[in-house]
Amino acid sequence: MNHLDFVFSDNIFIEMKITMVGAGYVGLTSAACLAKIGHQVVCVDKDTAKINTLKMGGMPIYEPGLQTIIKETTQSGNLIFDNNIGKAVSDSDVCFIAVGTPPLETGEPDLTGVEEVAREIANTMSDYLLIVEKSTVPVQTGKWIRKTIERYNRNRIPFDVASNPEFLREGSAVYDFLHPDRIVIGVETERARDLLVNVYRAINAPIIVTDIASAELIKHASNAFLAMKISFINAVAAICEAVGADVRQVALGMGMDKRIGRAFLDAGVGYGGFCFPKDLRAFIHIAEETGYNFQLLKEVEKINEDAKKRFVRKIRSVLWNLKGKTIGVLGLAFKPNTDDMRFAPSVDIINALLNEEAKIRAYDPKAMEKAKDLLPGVEFCSGPEEVAINADLLAIITEWEEFKQLNLKRIKNLMRLPIICDGRNIFERSEVEKLGFTYIGVGT
Ligand code: NAD
Image 1 (tube, rainbow, N blue to C red):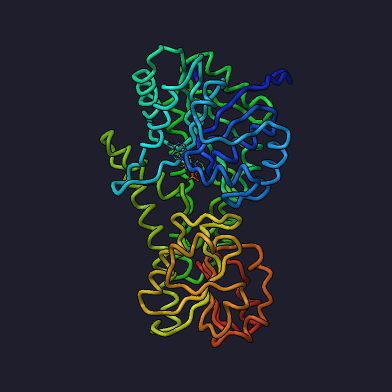
Image 2: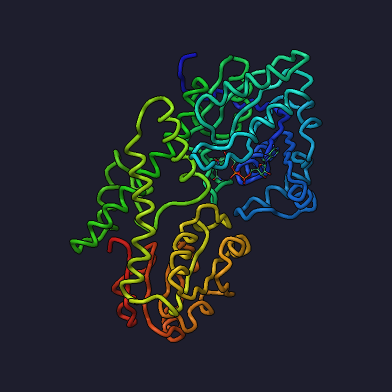
């Protein structure tokens, strides 16, 4: 099939019956948004506790705006939750697989969840079904899903497999799903293409139609490229620090060039989260399997690890010995507006500080529940001011909006030493120094 851009020329909407397997950040957001645009959606997860929470109107994750859409669509009957894939699939036109693909020790993603779902679908489908991989998976996974379904589909029910990678960002997932820059669909047949195009008919975005392997690669290549931009600016930040330049001005000047773009050029303590670290590892691994040594991406990873270590070195350089010192930490989630702690830079940074016997008092607006299991040695506080009490240094790790509004005069009065190590450049050096703080930023 030739690659082509698909643009709608009509406003006809056809309601479809959709199963979304996986009620995580991606599955739950996608299910709710597809229900909001008018489809009948069953969101399925094997985690019974999660499904029960959702059935009772609760939320297993924090994602701005999502609860409102779930409430609206469950009340209208467009969205329901279930534990049973079979029941949902036998009544659906399209089934999305949006289960987790966590990294294994080797760097490969664990695809057992995807296979498990493919087998269940094969065992239970009763009529033609379009099976769509939405999870981020290595190129060739579509082929394995096809093979698995062929093997277990004893009644020879017709089906198609397609790829529809998801580009939403946690923290703005609902907006991103409903207003994407583009929708990528990788298909093998016209029937699959028409069905998927119809799923997204109510969303105003260009649809890129490709073969399945290309769609799978678009996702990995995009995430690797974005991670590369972050590591690039972090490397530039190190040079800025050495020569007294300001990385924010460098990023601004670079970003105004349309060929480069300003996004993902914020220097900081490195990227984290469930996508970039694992997808980069997976892409390096995929490349290796094809015989290509993706040296560039290995360096991107190394610079990212170094960004966390450099932050710890800065703290050490201003406090000298860390043993017994109290460090207040603001922000734990891997980025603002989420409670997601997976691969958050805060975990590595705090563990390095704890290893040197510093005392850590921390606060995050949404991620503390999830952080408690990961950071047992940390004292969790009810807000930034409690964190500041008797702190020898305040470390900003996540750029939550509420930290930008802090009353720094009050914070200074609560601290033992007025030192801020700002891992996200949320403050203006001159203003903070005017208040009497010692200020350390990234590349500034
Ligand atoms: P998640 O861990 O939040 O959710 C995955 C869900 O799948 C869990 O609720 C889990 O119980 C369920 N699950 C696992 N195996 C199952 C099975 N066999 N049957 C039914 N349910 C099962 O993960 P996520 O963040 O939503 O990510 C899902 C996929 O989307 C991953 O491949 C990820 O890389 C990709 N992705 C994530 C993001 C993001 O920002 N989180 C963005 C784009 C793509």
